[in-house]
Image (cartoon, helix red, strand yellow):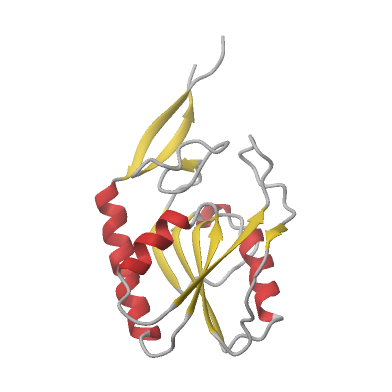
Length: 178
Protein backbone atom coordinates (compact mmCIF):
# COMPACT_ATOMS: atom_id res chain seq x y z
CA UNK A 1 0.00 0.00 0.00
CA UNK A 2 1.48 3.44 -0.93
CA UNK A 3 2.43 5.86 1.82
CA UNK A 4 0.70 9.21 2.18
CA UNK A 5 2.25 12.33 3.58
CA UNK A 6 0.76 14.00 6.63
CA UNK A 7 1.36 17.59 7.61
CA UNK A 8 1.74 18.71 11.22
CA UNK A 9 1.63 22.45 11.89
CA UNK A 10 4.87 23.85 13.31
CA UNK A 11 4.38 27.64 12.89
CA UNK A 12 1.13 29.43 12.13
CA UNK A 13 0.94 32.17 9.50
CA UNK A 14 0.64 34.69 12.34
CA UNK A 15 3.82 33.43 14.04
CA UNK A 16 5.69 33.67 10.74
CA UNK A 17 4.32 37.18 10.08
CA UNK A 18 5.54 38.30 13.51
CA UNK A 19 9.00 36.79 12.92
CA UNK A 20 9.28 38.55 9.55
CA UNK A 21 8.25 41.89 11.11
CA UNK A 22 10.86 41.44 13.87
CA UNK A 23 13.57 40.69 11.29
CA UNK A 24 12.57 43.79 9.31
CA UNK A 25 12.95 45.98 12.40
CA UNK A 26 16.46 44.61 13.01
CA UNK A 27 17.44 45.09 9.36
CA UNK A 28 16.13 48.68 9.31
CA UNK A 29 18.53 49.63 12.11
CA UNK A 30 21.55 48.41 10.12
CA UNK A 31 20.66 49.25 6.50
CA UNK A 32 18.44 52.32 6.51
CA UNK A 33 21.10 54.58 4.95
CA UNK A 34 23.01 52.01 2.85
CA UNK A 35 20.80 51.19 -0.19
CA UNK A 36 21.53 47.48 0.26
CA UNK A 37 21.18 44.72 -2.28
CA UNK A 38 18.87 42.03 -0.91
CA UNK A 39 19.88 38.81 -2.57
CA UNK A 40 17.28 36.04 -2.45
CA UNK A 41 18.09 32.39 -2.96
CA UNK A 42 15.34 30.82 -5.08
CA UNK A 43 13.03 29.12 -5.08
CA UNK A 44 12.38 28.84 -1.37
CA UNK A 45 13.01 32.45 -0.35
CA UNK A 46 10.57 34.18 -2.69
CA UNK A 47 7.60 34.36 -0.29
CA UNK A 48 9.77 35.33 2.68
CA UNK A 49 11.61 37.97 0.69
CA UNK A 50 8.39 39.50 -0.66
CA UNK A 51 6.94 39.76 2.84
CA UNK A 52 10.22 41.07 4.26
CA UNK A 53 10.75 43.88 1.75
CA UNK A 54 7.16 45.08 2.21
CA UNK A 55 8.22 45.76 5.81
CA UNK A 56 11.30 47.78 4.81
CA UNK A 57 10.74 51.49 4.16
CA UNK A 58 14.11 52.58 2.79
CA UNK A 59 15.86 52.39 -0.60
CA UNK A 60 17.03 48.91 -1.52
CA UNK A 61 17.56 46.70 -4.53
CA UNK A 62 16.50 43.11 -5.07
CA UNK A 63 18.24 40.30 -6.97
CA UNK A 64 17.82 36.54 -7.05
CA UNK A 65 20.05 33.55 -7.64
CA UNK A 66 19.15 29.90 -8.02
CA UNK A 67 21.33 27.38 -6.23
CA UNK A 68 20.67 23.67 -5.97
CA UNK A 69 21.90 20.92 -3.68
CA UNK A 70 18.85 18.65 -3.94
CA UNK A 71 17.65 16.34 -6.67
CA UNK A 72 13.96 16.47 -7.36
CA UNK A 73 12.03 14.09 -5.11
CA UNK A 74 14.77 13.76 -2.47
CA UNK A 75 14.66 14.94 1.13
CA UNK A 76 18.42 14.89 1.67
CA UNK A 77 20.96 17.26 0.19
CA UNK A 78 23.40 15.84 -2.33
CA UNK A 79 26.22 17.69 -0.58
CA UNK A 80 27.30 19.37 -3.83
CA UNK A 81 26.04 22.81 -4.72
CA UNK A 82 25.52 24.07 -8.22
CA UNK A 83 24.75 27.59 -9.39
CA UNK A 84 21.75 27.24 -11.66
CA UNK A 85 21.30 31.01 -12.15
CA UNK A 86 24.03 33.32 -10.85
CA UNK A 87 24.33 37.05 -10.24
CA UNK A 88 23.54 39.37 -13.11
CA UNK A 89 24.81 42.56 -11.47
CA UNK A 90 28.14 43.48 -9.88
CA UNK A 91 28.23 43.50 -6.08
CA UNK A 92 31.71 44.95 -5.55
CA UNK A 93 31.55 47.64 -2.82
CA UNK A 94 27.81 47.01 -2.29
CA UNK A 95 26.16 46.20 1.02
CA UNK A 96 24.73 42.74 0.40
CA UNK A 97 22.15 40.97 2.55
CA UNK A 98 21.55 37.34 1.63
CA UNK A 99 17.93 36.26 2.21
CA UNK A 100 17.50 32.53 2.88
CA UNK A 101 14.35 30.62 3.70
CA UNK A 102 16.05 27.87 5.71
CA UNK A 103 19.53 26.75 6.69
CA UNK A 104 20.08 23.15 7.68
CA UNK A 105 23.44 21.50 6.89
CA UNK A 106 24.91 24.88 5.92
CA UNK A 107 26.62 23.51 2.81
CA UNK A 108 24.70 25.63 0.31
CA UNK A 109 25.00 28.85 2.31
CA UNK A 110 28.72 28.30 2.98
CA UNK A 111 29.33 27.75 -0.73
CA UNK A 112 27.31 30.83 -1.66
CA UNK A 113 29.01 33.11 0.86
CA UNK A 114 32.40 32.06 -0.50
CA UNK A 115 31.19 32.83 -4.02
CA UNK A 116 30.00 36.29 -2.91
CA UNK A 117 33.08 37.17 -0.84
CA UNK A 118 35.30 36.68 -3.88
CA UNK A 119 33.38 39.56 -5.50
CA UNK A 120 34.38 41.95 -2.68
CA UNK A 121 31.14 43.44 -1.39
CA UNK A 122 31.39 46.34 1.09
CA UNK A 123 29.56 44.17 3.60
CA UNK A 124 27.94 40.75 3.53
CA UNK A 125 25.33 39.56 6.03
CA UNK A 126 22.78 36.77 6.17
CA UNK A 127 19.08 36.82 7.07
CA UNK A 128 17.45 33.42 7.63
CA UNK A 129 13.81 32.84 8.46
CA UNK A 130 14.10 29.20 9.58
CA UNK A 131 17.21 27.68 11.16
CA UNK A 132 17.54 23.92 11.49
CA UNK A 133 20.69 24.14 13.63
CA UNK A 134 20.67 20.47 14.79
CA UNK A 135 21.48 19.47 11.18
CA UNK A 136 24.44 21.83 10.75
CA UNK A 137 27.50 20.21 9.14
CA UNK A 138 29.26 23.42 8.13
CA UNK A 139 29.31 26.48 10.41
CA UNK A 140 27.73 29.53 8.79
CA UNK A 141 27.12 33.04 10.11
CA UNK A 142 23.50 34.06 10.59
CA UNK A 143 23.15 37.76 11.35
CA UNK A 144 19.35 37.93 11.42
CA UNK A 145 17.42 34.86 12.56
CA UNK A 146 13.68 34.32 12.58
CA UNK A 147 12.64 30.93 13.97
CA UNK A 148 14.32 27.68 15.05
CA UNK A 149 12.99 24.45 13.56
CA UNK A 150 13.62 20.89 14.76
CA UNK A 151 15.45 18.19 12.84
CA UNK A 152 12.46 17.33 10.64
CA UNK A 153 11.54 17.86 7.01
CA UNK A 154 9.47 21.05 6.80
CA UNK A 155 7.29 22.47 4.04
CA UNK A 156 5.16 25.55 3.46
CA UNK A 157 5.78 29.27 3.26
CA UNK A 158 7.96 28.77 0.18
CA UNK A 159 9.60 25.48 1.20
CA UNK A 160 8.69 22.43 -0.82
CA UNK A 161 8.89 18.71 -1.21
CA UNK A 162 9.14 17.73 -4.87
CA UNK A 163 7.76 21.18 -5.82
CA UNK A 164 4.65 20.71 -3.66
CA UNK A 165 3.46 22.56 -0.55
CA UNK A 166 5.22 25.92 -1.24
CA UNK A 167 1.87 27.72 -1.19
CA UNK A 168 0.93 26.74 2.37
CA UNK A 169 0.77 29.87 4.56
CA UNK A 170 2.20 28.17 7.67
CA UNK A 171 5.21 25.93 8.21
CA UNK A 172 4.52 22.21 8.56
CA UNK A 173 6.48 19.09 9.40
CA UNK A 174 6.06 16.57 6.60
CA UNK A 175 5.45 13.16 8.12
CA UNK A 176 5.26 9.85 6.33
CA UNK A 177 1.97 8.07 6.90
CA UNK A 178 0.67 4.68 5.92
